[in-house]
Image (cartoon, rainbow, N blue to C red; front, side, top):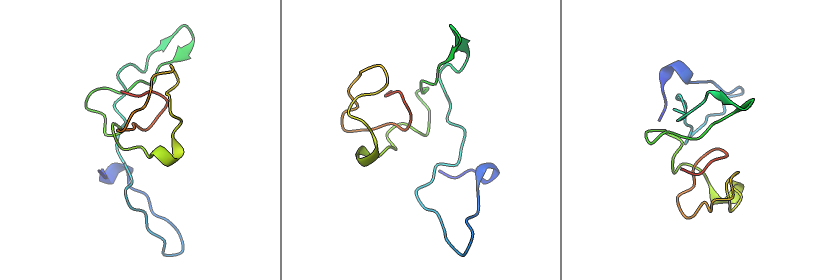
Length: 76
């Protein structure tokens, strides 16, 4: 999912693949209690695009990530 407005170039002839280059579509990015909230909306391109290799078993709220891992601190 690559939006040309968010595309980037790597140096030395390297190329990227599997990159998400679009707005993450946070469900609620307003500040509440002085802390930003970055949970994903149902249409976020980050849903199901994470890798188990790099993700903890639970998200920031302690919810299990399961098989389909979202990119970010929160599991959708």
